[in-house]
View: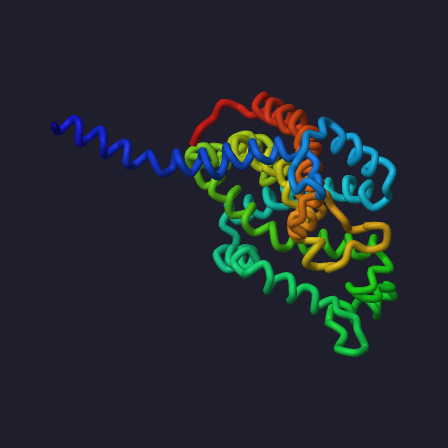
Length: 305
């Protein structure tokens, strides 16, 4: 009797998560894949099988339409941003690891943007660069004007390159803190005896970082690299919230932004396009993600702290 009760107790614990996985992951993903191979017949009010027609049509759209081509290219800005963040996060975390003066204060300062709501953070950043005579000119926009930088404001977007620079600044500023904390945690797990021995042997500041500390935290760094590649799937909030406009010829558009925008429309054609583009982009990125994982595993030494 006790064994039966124990069995039913275990079943009751795992039944809900299994059911949740079956409904909200397996069923939803299978339906999403099926939807990409269908078209909606408005006369009959039902979905019909379309084969690869949706994939062919949208592949042509991406290759021939300037807006969609820009969206595909812009999506990889997320990877570049994370490639900039990684070395910065390593250096900052290592500086904290060496217990500089006011280290705890600087930790809070770096992590503070990650604690603020993304909506509040974005609006604050937008207002700093606001350049509208009808409202007010933000302090950062005033500095840019004084330096001779022709920035006409977020809303007009006449200078997409300048706007991309500001998006980079925002993304690095808001994303650096979390990565610093993550890498700091990995460095703090390095045995003190190793760093103490390096110090006694006269190993310099940068030599210790490159030759000792980075190899010992490579499991964390490799995870960061993998997440950097995966981040292209969610790169839409930064340009969408900051610029609030795709710009001329979709100069600020991204594939995730396109998927989000079409999904919000809710009609059958938009949902089919959103699903198809998402699966196309997944098919493109999947080999890159697998290759990144294998390369990072080969470069990561077998250490664990």
